[in-house]
Image (cartoon, rainbow, N blue to C red; front, top):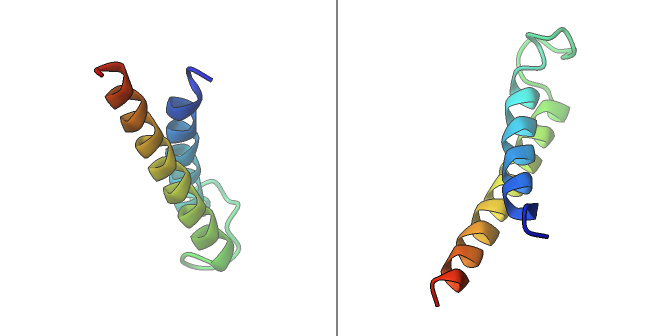
Amino acid sequence: MRYAPGGLLVVGVLLFLFSLSANVFGIGHYPGIGMRQTAGAIVGVVLAAGGMVWLRKAKGREGT
């Protein structure tokens, strides 16, 4: 449980970056950003934000 917030943040950022660069890797099917890439990017941002909030709350409790 100690590393979960940081792991969630890292996974979210990686999912975001991978989703938006899928065409570079030859995975994207559309010229431009498709619906699945957009969905992956949104989920990545939500995961990263959740990890960041969780990490900040955990840091705040340590100082108290």
